[in-house]
Length: 127
Image (cartoon, rainbow, N blue to C red; front, side):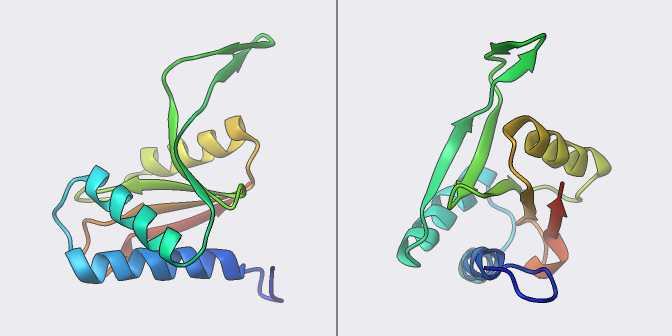
């Protein structure tokens, strides 16, 4: 579901769930806590998702397990990379873009929960 501005209803639902978690918990906790609570919130909203999805690296045609994991994939189409850091750095956005490329997904949200207002910690990227 995509409207004329290119924003999907699904990303709106995901962001709404993340905002609900942030309003309840605030900043300053571990990334893993936000992941568990976001999973609870997504499930309550009836969204399908996977957590800690294995991401093999394809090198010279071989799938190699290098220990990479996607934090979350929602409805099989939106990659969520969760952070709880003082600042989002260019390396975090590069990580999201690389994970999108390696996974074959087209849309990703980088969400940093360690901010006063969650809107300041969200980056949406499309390949």
